Image 1: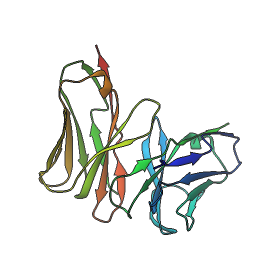
Image 2 (image 1 turned 120 degrees about the vertical axis):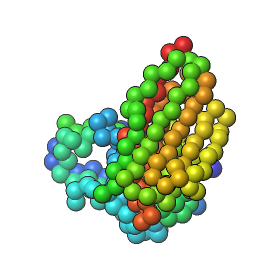
Image 3 (image 1 turned 30 degrees about the vertical axis):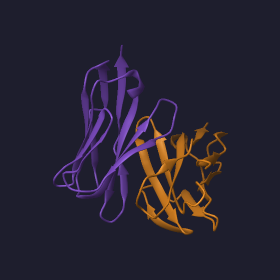
Image 4 (image 1 turned 30 degrees about the horizontal axis):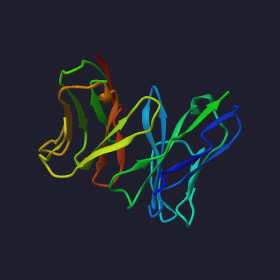
Length: 113
Length: 110
């Protein structure tokens, strides 16, 4: 069974731009969560989707948004990028909603210049 | 909001020695998970603890959930170089919100 895939793996953007990251969960998994990982802040929860609905949200500004499609694939969007948005963005999928083991993808390394 | 504290932040261990990392939540938990992230890699699930006082073992790793379901520990015996990485606890509240600890980064000297 293929693991969680994320595209792109690396991205360089400039301040003020917007970016869309994509995540394909493991086949059969319906829950997708997004995390931001930085050296200083560790793993910060962004949001969790299940059956195309956002079920949980972390403490991030409205510039961070996401959605989930009917095939469980998910995208997250960051608008008006700031230097502090430079981070590794990790996506994790799990079978059910809000419970159980999460399988992480390799992440997208975003650099904002 | 929920606060999760993980200590120590860094653990430098002599190969063959034991060590323990601790995870403490400010709120009672539904369950707690532990993940390991190797340098340059992504977090990988190790274990989930659900019951009060639960103890689970995986070879040299022993995981424990506190009686009050607010804290947990991971104890590694006879540390090996393969144990290098960052160990995260992930705390699930009763309202299902999930918070990760800052992690304990382990280095091993041979």
